Amino acid sequence: MKRAHPLTTTFALSALAFLYLPLLAVVVFSFNSAKFGFNWEGFTLEWYQKLFKNEQILELTQNTLFLALVSTAIATVLGTALALGLERYPWGRRMRASLETALYLPVVTPDIILAAALVVIFGILQTVSSVFQPGMLTMIIGHVTFQIAFVALVVQSRLAGLGRELEEAAYDLYSSYPDLLRRVLLPLLAPGIAAGAMLAFTLSLHGFIISLFTAGPSSQTLPLFIYASVKRGISPEIHALSSLMLLATLVLVLGSERLSRRKA
Image (cartoon, rainbow, N blue to C red; front, side):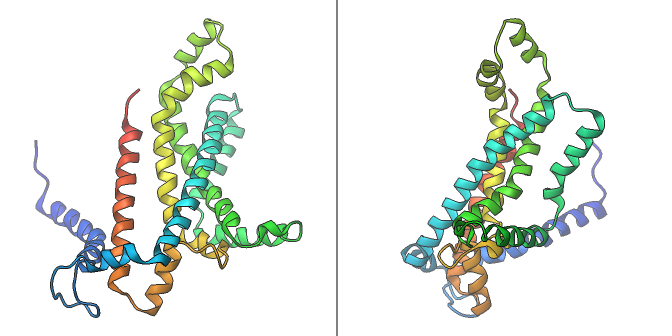
């Protein structure tokens, strides 16, 4: 095998360093015994111990996980249904192109635009019902709006790779559509659905802009807490919290990538 040019290798390593050195610095300083500044004064687990004893952090963790789990569950069901509708319904060529463009829009639209749009919509809905006041419900709806597209794209990709042979064979054996869905499609789509759900969960953990625009006084999450804390000054506990969130994200991303590549 021909070796890569040294210049190419240098550029690749530089890009990796640019991406990961800041994250590595956060992890390293979460073990630094220095409370202030960036001088290394020794290894310690004190900040992780304090983090797990912080009642405010524990409450915010519960809010964050509740938001991510509920929004992911809703987005997974709706995204899977959307993928099935797009891939299996006999749309015309122009209609299918229009629908796929609409599916990609939430993916490429800047979060700040989507968040501003949600504020407008919730402001209108508040005139109808008070349940749309900023809080956990509006945060869940806001997260679902951008999670659906990611789930649908992952499941649609999996569905396109399956082909229609097994479905046609099931119909030849007089299978009804509910049986086809339950016994054939969903088991085959399970890795794609799981990968889409894990991706949606990860995106919810990082949905700072959407959370910032839709949160209420009693529905704060960890990303909002980190943002407020950084404005007051970065503490070692914030480094520890960020490191744990980074670890959770890494596990979810690797799991999603592995599931998305799994063969039926």
